[in-house]
Image (cartoon, rainbow, N blue to C red):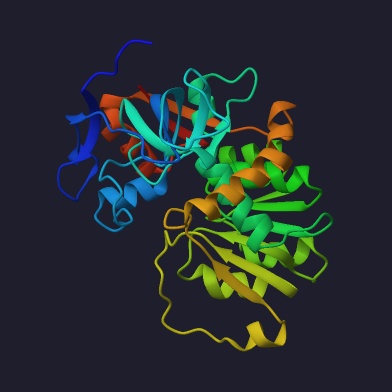
Length: 333
């Protein structure tokens, strides 16, 4: 193979702020550390944590680059010390802690996954962050079982469209919320038996009605705020509320916690980015075993919204913040 260049184009956050603070810049090509591979990035996913980082509300973990981007796909061009199971020239998609908005990005080898047959790099890059987030929160923390009912908030988002498909594929009943008729139809086409327009309908009442008064077993929530007490009222006995973001804010002024005790509820939440390589590797291994066969069979897959050139990362962020998107927003390098 040809020698690697010394520099690359990357997108930096010039100062915390609106989308236009994202600018192309020149950075040194990073070297892979022990246990890492260096990926020549073909595509990167745009995710809500990237927006939070750009706004100054979600700093990278210690020692992680300031370049945003949490999921990539591309060709492995160099191996760090001790890497096994991967070779230069392999195609991969990978979860990273940062650095995805660039021409080259190191990735811990245990967080790399094979590109599914028939997938181009843009579609492959839409998999790691979203599928790992859904897997760990819905199935590991939320312990969703076949025959149970899940309510997915933000059903037309990248996370939401993935959660609907995976929950359905593993035998659960799915309800979802979305903000307009078009988004609701997408949710139902993906497998939700009832999509609730949260601007016009009371999701708590419909969740009760759809379950014969029992309530739902699991809720995947990215809203927080005044959704929290309504989520608690929507849950069945032994129900689990899993919170992964706070688009509506992390606080609520007054809340009665008695139903949590009386219904024996579990309220949990998580972030993926600060976890150790070993923890992320365990999630990736479960995905490879249990979910990759479904992806390869075409049973589940990412819903794609739009793709922007790397240099237009600001426009990609503006689209995400507009909330008009359905599914994944991607950057192509």
